[in-house]
Amino acid sequence: MALRAALRSKCGLPGLLSQLSSHSSHARVCVSPVLVAQQRNNSTTPKVKVEFDQSTGVAVMHMQSPPVNSLSLDFLTEFCINVEKLEMDKTCRGLIITSSQPKVFSAGLDIMEMYGKSPERCGEFWRAVQEMWLKLYSSDMVTIAAINGSSPAGGCLMSLTCDYRIMADNPRYSIGLNETQLGIVAPFWFKDTMVNTVGHRTTELALELGLLYSPSEALKVGLVDLLVPEDEVLTTATKTMTKWLAIPDHARQITKSMMRKPTIDKLTSKREADIQNFVSFITKDSIQKSLRMYLEMLKKRRG
Ligand code: CO8
Figure 1: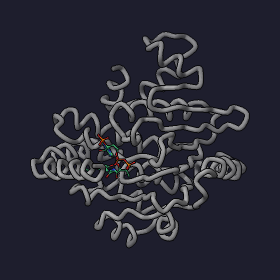
Figure 2: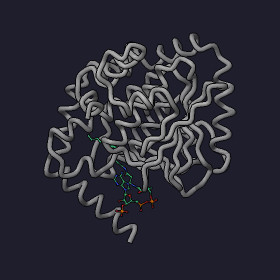
Figure 3: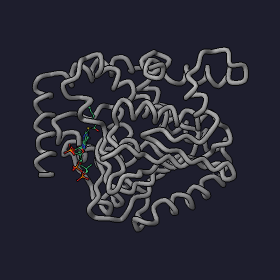
């Protein structure tokens, strides 16, 4: 609950976790024993597993939330805590994000978090989505998405926040910001992240049509950087990380910040308004109806 409260508060997790960090040796703040244990060790939380190799300075984060790693409030809370912990550990220089679920990197935002929920709960959820994006897009670590399955909508956004994307070359997988297909609209910061990666025209087409690209199409438009056989995604990500870590951290970090800061500042300055927009949009009857139809379509497709 303390973690959820941190996400709810204006300072968010950074506030809570920097408090934890600065007081860790004095234990002056009242901290959950679980969090303290997680700070000291590799952590295995129910939805995210982190393996940190101190000899290389690289952490691999495995998303393991069955069936499809959908980004629920609980998932996002755990995810952000783990990213923040790695960020604060200055021996951690690189982060690889991948999935433990077969065939799916992440199905994007958990649709059930947006359907039939109270405005308060929707607001809490949206703050957590923003937090994930802010943490990853502004990370000082080298971040690589090892995309070993389909990655629609919020899953695509998560991979777009990384410095580099390696995808499994399997034509059954797809990636893209398909929000319009659900009858919803990708917010400005989803759009900005896509524009920063593939340019304005490709983003315009992709967002209006809600395009989901095959891996080879995604490579062609620059949505991913490299395709490899499925069983080589993680090893290639590790090799690629070594190349990135050969660049001096400070020069790379300043450059990354120079490229991304205007986009980050835009959301930071409009964060509360963006939450209000999301809540009033998603709770509209017409949007709820679209989401219900999409959920039914997902179920029928399965049956
Ligand atoms: N949220 C919740 N449940 C989901 C989601 C999801 N995003 N995706 C799939 N599921 C559920 C399915 O309904 C199914 O449930 P059940 O077992 O009860 O029938 C179960 O997960 C397994 O799904 P599938 O059988 O479809 O699994 P497959 O392995 O065949 O396919 C896919 C995996 C490709 C990921 C497929 O499930 C899929 O296409 N899912 C939908 C993905 C999607 O469209 N996500 C968009 C989410 S919206 C978003 O991320 C950004 C919103 C921005 C909001 C802005 C508003 C202003």
